[in-house]
Length: 78
Image (cartoon, rainbow, N blue to C red; front, side, top):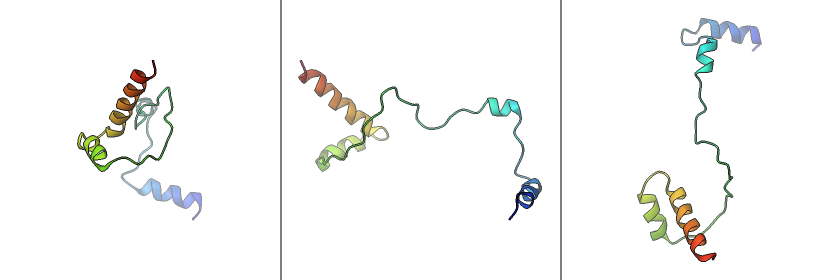
C-alpha cells in the first residue's frame, strides 16, 4: 500500500484528527518517572513466604523490598 492510499484511508476515518499545537503542548509522558539512579536488574531466589508477603501489599512490592534491603545495608555498613 502506498503512502497516498494510507493517507486517504486516514482522512476518511472519522476517529482520526490532526492534533493542534495546543493539544500537543498538553501531552505528558506516561509511565513511571525516570530515576536519578538506575536500578540493576538481577535474578534472585527468595522464599515463597517472603515474596507472598511483599506481593500481598499490592503494586510497588519490588520497591518496598528494595527499601527493606537498603535499610539493612545502611544499618550493617557502619
